[in-house]
Image (cartoon, rainbow, N blue to C red):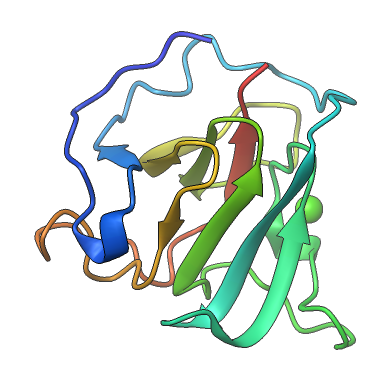
Length: 142
Ligand SMILES: [Ca+2]
């Protein structure tokens, strides 16, 4: 997967993730879910500072709308994540727009290096980039 970087180290707690605005980023993305073997899990949290309800992923998921917070029934995680931790061995991206019809994901994205975390998705890139309550898709690098 080609990685377009508008590089900027996140300021929070030494996070090494990179983010970008990439309306074209869906070009070349896989069009179906892959059973890739990711070590560990990528965690999203309802509130900043890794608090509130949580959900984790260890494979691509193009459609957060049908995912529930752990321990809930029918309460979608879509557009509600406020902090995140990539506790996997892969690069991963959270995308603004998901897809349930075979297409890729699109819109703004936040890219996480293996092990990277974002304490507040609403205050990325020294507070200049707001990804709070936007995540709708996750894609891991091969
Ligand atoms: Ca899903």
